[in-house]
Image: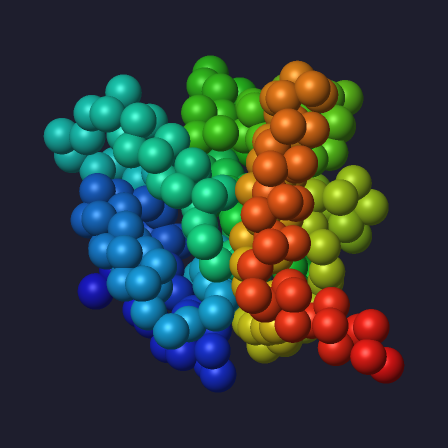
Length: 240
């Protein structure tokens, strides 16, 4: 079993479970991850946490996997990253040990990232004559800016959590990283689910031209303000 699931309160926690390969992603792991996401998308859980082992969150693709088709793997990983970014429930990466290459890119697919103080984060592909190919070239500049993104990708050197926090690459540093990620997820999944989903959808539209993004925002604002949940909350507020 390459993915293990445990539930902590209303949070589904998925643990990457190939410690002997530092949780390198192979075809079987990717399939298991998608199967778990199918379940979580439709069950009663309110949020998702993805974590790894103390030694490694994930070091990216298993480059020793026999018979792997490079282009097909990129397509499958792009589909995973897009799925995580559009996932209907809050997603948090709990990073410990090495979070490198495609492993860091999986974390970038989630909305939030919390790291252990000893975590090592990086995109070392350039040192192998490759480029980050699982979304980092597109997601990272939107998150931390072009200059820092180029620094991280062109040097191939890892950064520590303190630097990552200062850059905006991660959201918290915690010694109890899984517990912190669960609490973080619950706090952000505990308000108004329809409004939360609409906010995340609107933010994803920020990559559009401004006029189109504002159209999305307006449509979502109208839809949420007309919901029974919003009407009840506004009525209670006015009655104070």
